[in-house]
Length: 154
Image (cartoon, rainbow, N blue to C red):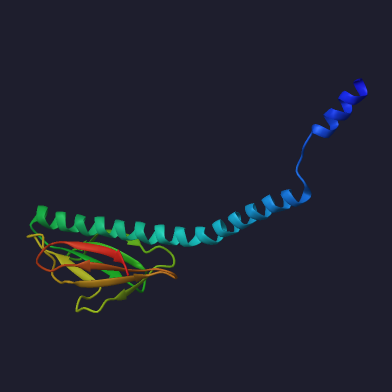
C-alpha cells in the first residue's frame, strides 16, 4: 500500500519537457531582441522632441522679454557650433547646445538662421527651420504677424 502511494505520487508529478522550455526561451529571446532594436530609435525621437520643446519655450521666452522690455530679442541658430542663443543687441542672454546627432537645415523659406521678436510680440520673419536626426525630420515653423510658432514631424 505504501509502495503504491509512492509510485502514484511519482507518476502524478508533472514537469516541463525540453521542447516546451526551448519554445518559451525562444519567445523570450524574440521579445528581448525587438526591444533592444526599438529602444535606440525611441530615445532618438524623445531627444529631438525634448530639444524642440526647449527651443519652443526659449522662443516664447525671447518673445516675453521683448514685450516686457519694449525692445527686441533675437534667437540665433549657429550651425557651425551646433548652438543657439538669445541675445539683446550684442549681449547674449543665454546659450544652449544642440543635442548630439541633431543637425539644422534651412527650410524652403526666406527665413535665415535667426529671427527677431519685437516689442509687439511678433517676429521679424516667417518660415521653417528643419531639424534632422538619423531617422527623424522635424519642421519648426514661425508665423509672421501672429507671434506664433509650431513644430511637427515631417
